[in-house]
Length: 149
Image 1 (cartoon, rainbow, N blue to C red):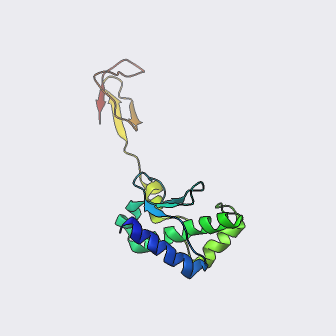
Image 2 (image 1 turned 60 degrees about the horizontal axis):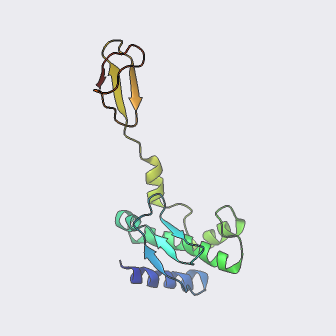
Image 3 (image 1 turned 90 degrees about the vertical axis):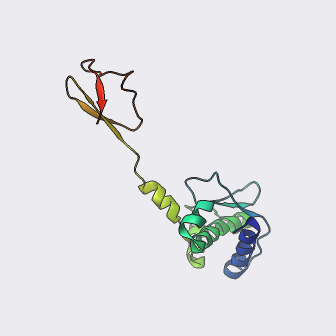
């Protein structure tokens, strides 16, 4: 899907679900990592994470667009457009949009890689998120050599 097709889809959803015209641009943004999309307040444009289209399909993009259009239309009307605002929550429920996207849920559930090390002398073991250079570092308790388990 191209940016033009995405903009046309957004305009169609805006007219069908909100009975209002969408006058700005919608584009895919590769730099989005933890969110499915965002509404940019200063420009009025909407950006969508392309990974949501690749991983979860067309319906996921439609749900993201509905969510961002709620922000868009409420902001332009001067009403509460933030997630915690009652007006936003009611409008999102009316149009059948989702509060969170699937890719965000998967990001939260993803576990970090852990490394486990042990001292060769005193046999104390510990876990680290980052990898450790065992030639450079020693055990803090006994100054023994470390090995990766």
